[in-house]
Length: 163
Image (cartoon, rainbow, N blue to C red):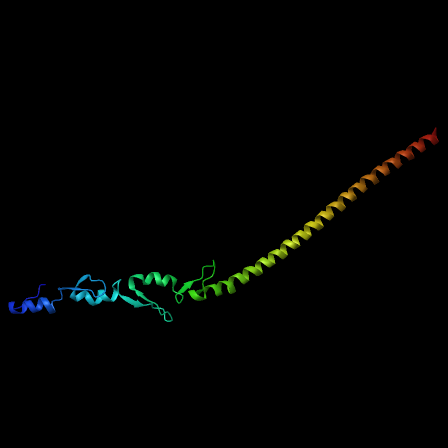
């Protein structure tokens, strides 16, 4: 301490008023200068405090408070679903995800199942059209063959008449 005084006051100064004297923190027994003691005790990791969330009644060591706030049901947290910017109390998060995201996902899934059924129906129709086209092509080939055969027969009959 750099304070100057009469020697007769030195003992009392060291014991009671010097801001440089070391005092023990009442929470952790760490020795801290007198002028810093109040600040240290206000943030001492061993001091107990109430969770800052209004409806939470938990009290714990300040050193554990950050962990508590990661699990506190009264802490506001970001929704974990991609694209959702909602901030919800942790205790209400499950209800939010179910009502806002799972219901929507179920509707999208139902819509996709409908699209798949439509595509399957179209594929079935396409297969039936392909089969009908094959039958028509076969019929056209038979007709062409019959036409050729008839033309050949007529040529033969014509040739016999001339002879």
